[in-house]
Length: 353
Image (tube, rainbow, N blue to C red; front, top):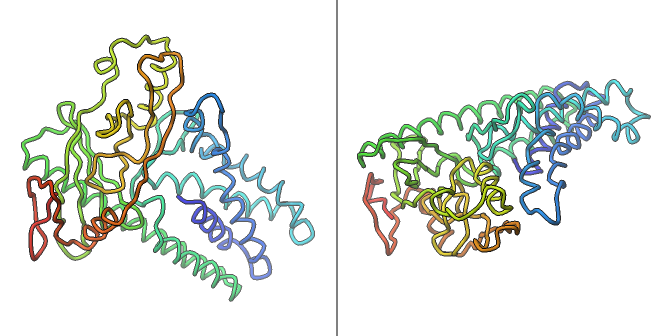
């Protein structure tokens, strides 16, 4: 999640264990501890742009690291709270706050090493977006109210809301993925793998991606609260395969290993950018849920085998893109110059691309 939400969730969990006299201190301790795990984002290399990806959401987010992270946070915060709380209490609130970071990230879409070092599998439940204003603002209101009224019961109510909201996200994800199965059946495709991801800031509009016969198909799915899903048919792109698409690279080359690393980070959802030569993108993420253009990727020269790739972002958000996103979110008809097969339609017209 975004850094603000990480701190807020850490604060509210720490509040829930605090009495009236300690609630303000627990709030600050939990908030600060909830941010600490993201210090892994500072692990970088000036020579290797992908180095930071290796450690992002890695060991500092692992469940086994929670006691260590809590101890580090408590030690740092002891200098501020030593005159108010015992170290034991500081450690309790810091550990509770720290424990939320990796778990919360596991609910999102990118992937978190929750079970390191026992497995390299990255947990990504895909039930909430990285930024979700409704989720965050509601919890902020609960945190501030708990402080205002010195009541950990309000904090517990906020935690209950978070649990219900995440459960709702799981239900919405399952509805979106059921729709993916129907889309593929409609097209006569046999699925190799598929997943749905919430788009930025909501649990209504989802990005659908599935693989069949070396092709990724990408669509947008609006999962309304009280209506049937609406599909905005998207596009497709060939899956990148290193050995086939760049057969001249040697396994010992820097470039070869960089591409392998990026493919791992992207869970294999990699394809060439349709508008930028020699840019491989993580096509799980795009500004529009039915668009194949990624928001980040690696750029390289295939003739410079011993040079590291560059890691770039492509987030050129214009007014037209924003209007299309809003229209999809509201379930309106999309009139684009390039239309595609129509799989379903909202009331009043066809949803199409």
